[in-house]
Length: 125
Image (cartoon, rainbow, N blue to C red):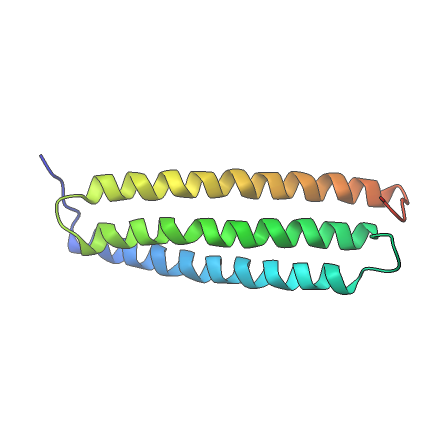
């Protein structure tokens, strides 16, 4: 037995997928900017605390953006295919779940490095 969402539900899925695609793009752009910022901030042989935070955040942000895209495609498939709405919705939710884990990791690392910075550590390496 297949289940199909209504036209209003499909509009909601398209809206969510469009906003998620914008979010993915912002994460990817932010990740690239953070990575470049970290490379420009390198001074001598040591990598400063700020550069390390930027490098880690840049890599994680880029990864988050990349992980959002398959979820977006699954959400779009809910609205554009017939006979597999629930399957596509569940696939999209699983993929977004992986993205949330990476986002939580990025926030934890940022908090730890922020605390290290509060205590006046100039250089981590």
